[in-house]
Amino acid sequence: MPGCLRLLLWLVLPVAPAALGVARGVEPALWGAPAMLGLFVAVYGAYLSFDRRAFRLYQLAARHREYRCTFSDSGVVTRLPDGTSSEMPWSACAGFGETRHLFLLLTKENGALLWLPKRAALTDAELDRIRELHERNLRRL
Image (cartoon, rainbow, N blue to C red; front, side):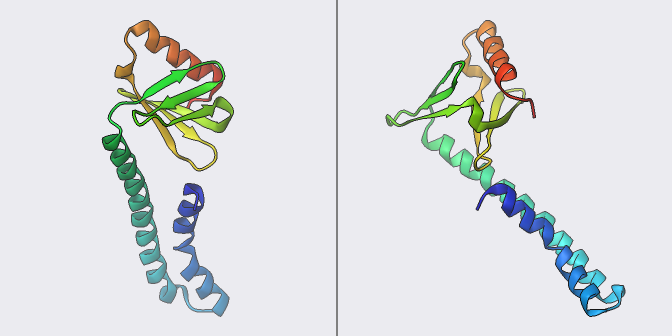
């Protein structure tokens, strides 16, 4: 299930008791507590979904300690040590983000993150070239 749909399902959870209460003509005082409990469960569930996704990304990084990324005008090619590779054109990316230590690419299809540690750039000029490629081809998130 795509990440956006899963998040939407979590956010609809607190609305369900309220909608059922209104549809059946129940007093708001009676369905308010289940709606608040649903809101708490939804926020916690959404947090766990993001936390699990980050943990899976961490596990992937632990299995593949080194990989190579090649940036070009057409997109990004990633090569893992086991010989597998994947190519992602810029058109498949929803945008990019930048932290102090990472570049993050968000895919359109399933909301997956492709990350590149900034330490991979050997020089400041190379880091600026990667940043310029991102800004030219993607929108900043």
